[in-house]
Length: 482
Ligand code: NFE
Image (cartoon, rainbow, N blue to C red):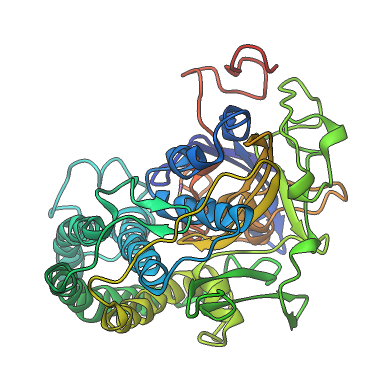
């Protein structure tokens, strides 16, 4: 007899995500036979940017999310660089890399210790308090001395995240949300002192990543080997590439590309479209390239079940994120499962932290950090980069020196996308199919798989009327756009 499980909201993510799965007996085992992910809040940043000075976008799009604001600042500035026809000087390129990398370190440590690892730890007798309780109590949790050690690292990780913010703030003014990313580069000066300050904090964080985070991730992976075959999904991967290695941005530390139905290839930005058949958006805005995209909410649409559009590459659902980046570059080849996402994220953190020392070495104190430019009357731009959670794109049109179109596709829009025009499931939905569920009252397997994508619905939404978020009837839409 099929049973429907609704997890609403999924906790230990950013933002509001509702997951609905149908569990039925397959070969005598209870398994997920259907899945739907719903972003239960409306996102309208594209709308509030219209009519603004294009330079405002670098500030306003950061407010999409406090976890990955640097990525939005960068995507926006790349967009502006293209539209304004300006190239950042070497120091500007390196500072953009360094501040973004600081945000990656903070975000990946956050995901492992504070969002994902608690799915695997039993703290009974160690910490019987929030955020460790209430929790599901499956029989496979790690307890005892190992759990006590991991709880200690959980606390230490909070300090490491603060240090990562402090480190990034040396060149970003403050974090989260930076004022220093501007068209043409970054505003701060490079001095021998601030390079030394950055390097000292980086050394502390690297020691934690090398000696604590990576070993802990490996320990959890070793304790849960069955999760190397769960949460696999389509196996399609996509990366826009990130961390420019040259002025033109043609070479990236993590490269761009796609891996589709077992075949790898270069990124062709023209192959990106968004379906809205199952999102609460007007059907006429469906299957458009984001440079032509529109955001017209239709909260009562009968075929809708989410506020997310469904991004597709060559018409197919693709996973984005650390595993996709590591897979496309050939740095990680073990597999594409729930646990591979956790391990690839840890190994990416280690690689990136090591690269940051090299970028610090290349900074030249006193050299310019940005190139001046003027607001164009008419222009188009695109800023494609990688946020910690995966591929991020901003597309913009400028008319009469103001923003006339702005579209954003976030990593979580890719991963938590709904079904598309062909009713193909989104990557997380597909990854849940076939998952055995031991106890339908405590479906921890679902949570572990969803958490492995590190979803951030805050990146996909911005307001909700508390307690009234079901299925499109009572969402709060800003006046004048419904
Ligand atoms: Ni809100 Fe973000 C990242 C972006 S995810 S955290 O990483 O863009 O949609």
